[in-house]
Amino acid sequence: MNICETCGKQFEPNRFARRRTPQRFCSRKCNLKKYRTTEQFKKNAKLYRQLYRQGEYYKKRKREHARELHRLVIEKLGGKCQRCGVIDERILQINHKNGGGSIEFKKVGPFNLYKQILNGKRQTSDLEILCANCNIIHKWEIGIIQ
Ligand SMILES: [Zn+2]
Ligand SMILES: [Zn+2]
Image 1 (cartoon, rainbow, N blue to C red):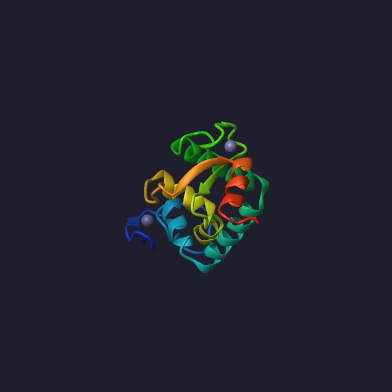
Image 2: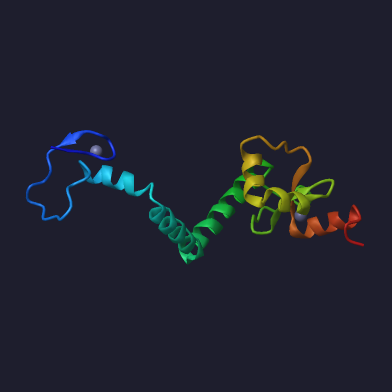
């Protein structure tokens, strides 16, 4: 009988396995569980995560996810330009009526801002949907562009 290093249970070692050292774990699951706590594993996991995030697949998924959130936010805020009524979401933007949009965008990040709007944590009375053209006109009107 051996004792598993992870779960502490006694187990019958596999008599057919050819190994130089005694079997330390009762199962593959317990072996993995222990391995996941080692520095080596954490280092590898970090590396793989970095590589994954540099990959095209991840970037594409992230873009799609952002687009989807953007679409949902637009839908929640009326689904069309509040001035001219355009509904093409490729040119619709979330506008801060009193300005300061780019500051909030930088501070919380677009992802979080979208999420906060969708789950109701960010109130939306100072936000409106404008198309790109009407947004520029709005910026002229409140003096951001002169
Ligand atoms: Zn075990
Ligand atoms: Zn418009």
